[in-house]
Figure 1 (spheres, helix red, strand yellow):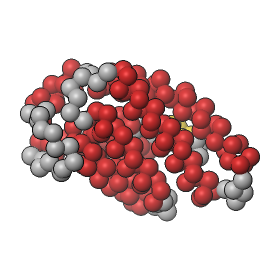
Figure 2 (spheres, one colour):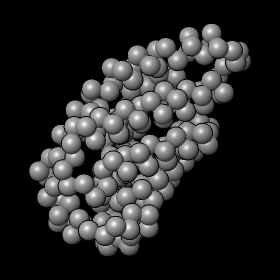
Figure 3 (cartoon, helix red, strand yellow):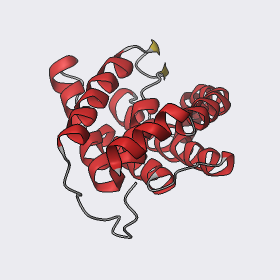
Length: 185
């Protein structure tokens, strides 16, 4: 991986990097649609592709790609489901993953745990819950919000070790390390 300290730039992509990005975007679209649950409480494994995009392309590219994927998913694949708050949440998640994974050849358990924990807490439990309450609930009081958020907290507590484990083993996989050296060196 390039050893530059310029994290906050859009690095130019060569053909291989662009093709890999397109494949990751396509895979993300598939994984984000393979969900279990309701509109309010969903389990998805799209974090896998966003973690790789964040690791390889940095904060600006990953935030841009997260926004593009959210808009495409909400307008073309699932028409009528667009809400700008979810796009903002996707960008925040991509930023958190990028700050944790970009330019790190080996990613520690601690780094993965903090990144996943922040995404689950800030994005999934925090922001997404606020957006869903704004969209679907007529009563905007504290007891109804607590009743609404409780299953989301439980779901994210269950998903935390699963996401940490998958992310850690994926980001430290030899194939990923080889791909990083081959395509991004």
